[in-house]
Amino acid sequence: MISREIGICGIGAVTGYGWGREVLWDGLSSGKSAATLEGGYGKDRDETAWVAKVPDGGDPIDGRSRFARAMRASAREAIADAERRGWQPGPRVGLLHAVVLGEVDLWREFYHDEQTLKARDYLALMPSTPMSTFMQEYGFHGPAMNVSAMCASGNAGLLTAKAWLDAGIVDDVVFVATDLSLVPENVLHFVRLGVAITDTEPLDACRPFQEGSRGFSMGEAAVSFVLSRNSGRPYALALGGAMSHDAHHVTSIDMGLDQVRGCFRDALANAGVPTSAVRYLNAHGPGTKQCDRAEATMLDELFGAETALYSVKPLVGHCQGAASAVETAVAALGYDRGFLPAPPTVAPGHPQLLNGRTEIEDGLTVKSSLGMGGHNSVVVLAPPA
Image 1: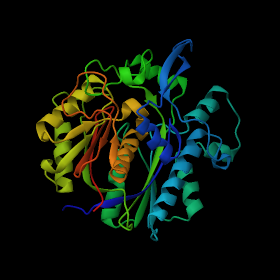
Image 2 (image 1 turned 180 degrees about the vertical axis):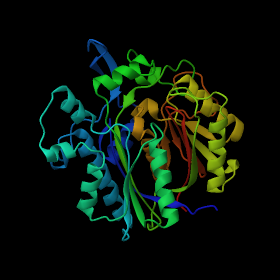
Image 3 (image 1 turned 30 degrees about the vertical axis):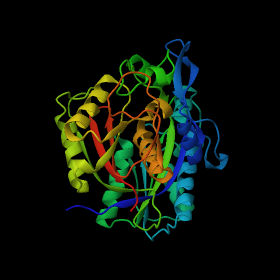
Image 4 (image 1 turned 135 degrees about the vertical axis):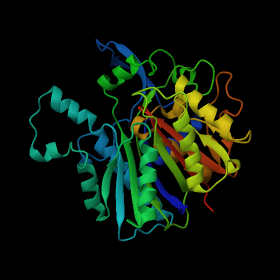
């Protein structure tokens, strides 16, 4: 059975550009990367890497960590935004939190410094605690749950929220994706994997679907949505989607692409739309050979020449567990603002790749995300009716 669409009714964001949805949009619109070159990486902490870290900020009452403050700030912004756009919460508001590595700064401090914590502070490290305290703040009584699917966690959370709404379990969902995990130990291992940029500016090295791409700058973000059918002015509509798993390798894509291909087809079938209706492929696009090849193949096999391709990872960085949520926010805001802040191209690439700011046209957006370990996910978005 084809399910009904849900509205993205409010958006909140904290990213490497700073605190707030408009700060994100202005940063993307500038065409400049959020990443800066920082030291403290490598075996002896004497190497540098390009990282788009969330700057200090937020409300100290929300906790000691950037993670806790960013999670709550983005969720509050999304709720306030949705209310301004006409959303009124129902009696069963659920909370979904997409997270891969939570409270990394505090856990690092706990283990490295052997810090003795009060019981209340120790409980704050648990992945369920930020959700519980946020539910208390707003008096929400729907289910509250974490979702984790590596880089595809944002899509996984959105699809889970839609399933809750379709099943009648909730009236509305606040969905948050948070990843503030760029401590030296984590960045070091992505450098060792050969995918994190250390020696070249992000827009030069991260060239999704272009010749000479070498990987990505690592990013951080907390992005939130209010998802509901009870809003007069949604940014965009989520029509449906699909997920699958390669069951192949902990990092590599199964290059037969059978599961990736099936995921795209299942998502379109679930949304009840033909490939001809898709105007944009908002790609995972990390700038790595495997992922770029997989998504470019899907574009060439499944969609027509009128479907444009873009990835914003050269600008906002690869935000890991929050990556697809950031990129969904870009698609939704693009429908609202009338243009897409695609990064400028720097080398020959796919003929359907967008080059810089582009006025948006009517049509659907397919948002794909290929999470490390074989997590395939595709969401189909539409402009508001």
